[in-house]
View (cartoon, rainbow, N blue to C red):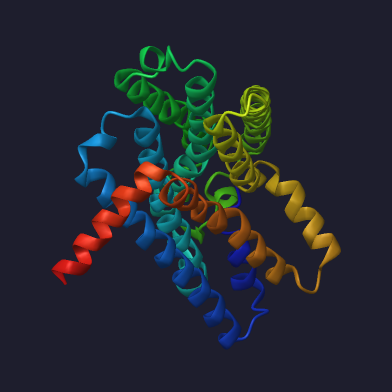
Length: 305
């Protein structure tokens, strides 16, 4: 994932005017604050009503919300740094990049798990409470983090083993390829992303077509679940564009050499910011139970104010 390639190119080549750079930063900050403001409301609603604590679906959802809040905040910080500070100490940059990578890779895995839960609820309704327990849901969340850690931490270990100590005290442009420069890391990343890409999409397609088959029985819940999987698939498509980022960015540079920085900015908005705005729509608006309690929570806040 090119966390700051969108903007470090701008910083290096100085191709943008101050007003244009300021506009891009304002757009990113406003979008990030808006998305996180909505997500904070969803998180407060979840915490306030105990009914959500006992439902695996909402536990997975709130994990996705908190993960996306963190991811949006980190990527915005990296975006702004590339326009202002330009270079950071490698040690500090490593921490920011690693956290951003963890949360970015968590999202498609979390979406895949939510699709499986939805599939079990529709196709095996009588066994849903036995299969999808609170304990197993927490174990799944732990497995999501363990998978991301196993995917990302080798970058750090390879860098520690191959780079001199002075490297970690130097200042660099804060992006993945500058703090983890070893060629082996790139090969490892490509293989890992290919495995993730195939695995997650197989899960999405399988659950969608199984639910689609059930929806033919005119079940309202099945049709709603099918539409939810479609939204998950669209969200997943945007998120997983990061897995083909190197090839995609290379094509953009060849096709739009004069407007490459603008293309990078559009890529950043579509891939990093936009997918994080879909989760509130799926559960904050479409889900009847969550929507009812969210309205109650908002009405309480309005009456208090």
